[in-house]
Image (cartoon, rainbow, N blue to C red; front, side, top):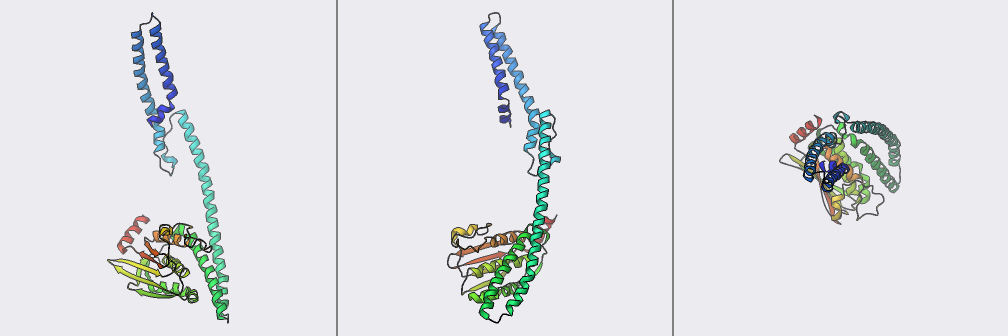
Length: 337
């Protein structure tokens, strides 16, 4: 801050120095003025000027030093008190700009919330004809046509489900309900919903659950597993998907392993990035790059650690590690307080 202050007052300091040089020059050229007296006057003047600069630095920079230490929330109640005229002008201008920005943010928040509500209502409205379509497809006599129609119906259903949860994720903390969740039941529901798609691609499931319950939110965990299973089925062909659960030292893990397309090593660090669709399958225009990104967001809210191992052309393994029950409760309490 002192460097900024000296730079700001450089013209004043330069002007003072020129005046002192003028006094010395007069003492040197004018014989009626003692050069020693002129030098003494310059010395006293410089000493007093230095004291003046120090006092002015402390007084003039107090407001800006405190302003510089404010956090990003920019709460005007914590704003330093303005004492000089220029400080008051700065304070009033900042307060006016903050009021304008706050009003714009409030309007934007209202608009975003309205858009979210409209999209959620639209998704719920679309689900009704989708359910009717499912019933109509199931009554189709041609098995090949029925299978094709169900596959396309499932794609629409999964995309709507992904969009629905995407809009709810910013408010996930208000929606969490932590309880003992039956993994077997949850997996059965998700696998059943993908049954026709799996039959079409010749994909089966091998489920081995040494642990059948876990403490979490069943709805959001179901969404995570649905996205992982959908990816596994999408990028596999005529192979099995292995699902296992274990508990070791009170830590429960669920692993989902497929033997499909796999992920390029250079892509592993980016698969959870928003919109990333991979370099090995970059021409897949159906990929949105949102599924794993949403899985990561949900995992963070549920305190689930998610790891991935993959080899291109050999398959992918996702491992979900749940926190210990006492650790989960402790962190949840801290977040709520």
